[in-house]
Image (cartoon, rainbow, N blue to C red; front, side, top):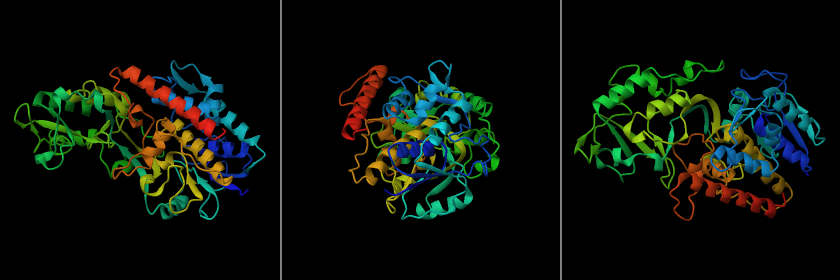
Length: 435
């Protein structure tokens, strides 16, 4: 059996290397540490957590992040095993002792005789060799240039995402469908504000707390895409001539244009998720919920993904990637982790887990059965590989899962049934693939 090169010792790379090695595949794991460090890393261990020690909720039946972890747990994920063994009290969340977490994973990797460790920067990719690129959001410049060639220049270095809202949580009594000047199919949802509502919104927006930039980030990364709160600080009417421009949007309740109007755009074909158009933001998540809820139509909004603005490196997966995480043009080259466009620690590890499962089967000449999109693991892969001209990274949320085959009004019950369906699909996947 051929050796597999795994580039990157973060959560995704560690998961890939471990899963392949424990199943008899020879792995060469490349990581620049400890020879060099990225600006975000300080530990010599693999799978170092940088921004937080929290892996989000552990609620399997009410939170997609919790459901994702349970799917991975049942598939034998190293990352989840490490988290379960190094957890610290954090209420309903799964938080870990960072040093013990990465040390646990490093020790597990070192125990595998099938893994060869190489501590050096990778600057080239041989497309004729089985390779998994899991280099993460801080991919080095030389490797980035090679990835740009492989991914047909579809490589981003900046993640500027507006919040995404659950359609059912939008107050349609204070919103209406329609496109500007009625040019289109009426797909947008318009959220009008009167002058008093707009002024209150502006006051809170300009004074809201912003997320802290990390040492390897600076204000220069925002030059190409201005956060809505920065735009608002440049004048009271700036947003009314920008993302809150009301012209051409006639409110059927009043028969005229509003003082200001936010547009929401479909994020998925079924219209379960809506994107706040032009609302890239660097506000903290709590402030996003508080301030954006001042828009009448969003007073009860459920945020499937909050807006983020940070340095990131990710490929245009819808154009170049298959659902098994292999490149369309170079089927021996795989990508895993945040570089694919999944957002978050567990999501990154989950993509690595599935990449390893699919690649192992390919190496053994077995058919590749991708996991059902009714699971969070499958839905994430489906999302990042489905055509999307405004592609931005996505985290685990119930909005990306397909609806149930019957209407369930109660939101908690609907999530529970989606979770139960997901876990059944995972069980079936395990049986079908002898995992």
